[in-house]
Image 1 (tube, rainbow, N blue to C red):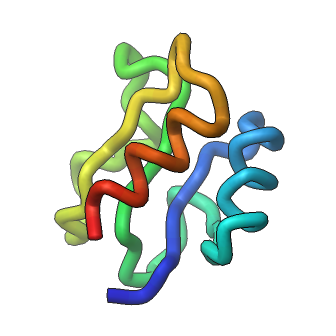
Image 2: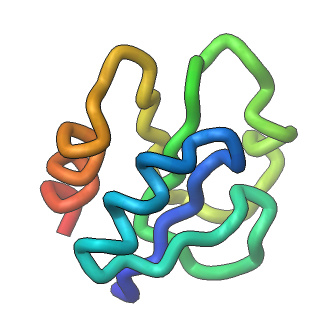
Length: 77
């Protein structure tokens, strides 16, 4: 699977950490075939993400460092 990860716009440090590890970072509304979707806080509707076709896991980055999020993503493949 491609190394594409959807990340919420407000998570710039996580976006940069993923890019540094060779991942392509896209918006959660992207139509790309993503490996995972990284969000901050699971209480929100995640931009209506439950209606998407993509079956990628959602990673809640709340309380995690960028390195921890990268490790979580790397564990998926």
